[in-house]
Length: 282
Ligand SMILES: [Zn+2]
Image (tube, rainbow, N blue to C red; front, top):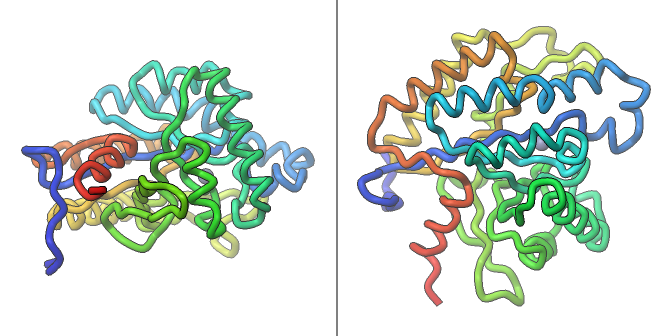
């Protein structure tokens, strides 16, 4: 039991689930250093996400009426525009996740600004949206990154790991803080289900976890967070869990989640707006 006061959520809800997927496609380190163009296998592994897994996943989300946030590198939007437009058309949120999945910690401030500018243009041109949210692709950033994000129109981030509730990040030079909706590795499908032979990721592992065990882990994490009235988000990836066998795993997870009637199912943007209204008083 937690001794800290329970967060409040829109009545009659007592806890919050902000389902989120990172639609990385083939972006990432191998694309940033160019090696992916010598590794068609890896390109195919990533491209499967927007090309095949996403449509299957969107159907499942419809069936459970689950509002979802997709963090999408802008390069993926440029290359699979129709698939990404379907996310918006079906009522979900699309948010920033770099251009080619850059580590913002490895970029200068000017480079970070360039990436965000390019993302804004791509999202506007292809999706006709101004995104509100951001998830750093590598889980780290520079001290000046929050201010750079706010300048780019971002109101919340889902990048950090240090709490199981949202919190406010004061940003020098701005009255309104940035809302952080922290995620946790326990809810990252890579941790139990990712496996590729080349590159061998996760390095040194030669098998994935049992699906039964994975489902059990996720359900327990959900139960614990909801019992304490917290906010749980996920770091799932269509290319990992949007496959024919694993989508059945997600179906069972969503059934489990929907069994409770005290949970607010919301996009990260909705959570951020709520948290700001409840906790920021100027
Ligand atoms: Zn990612």
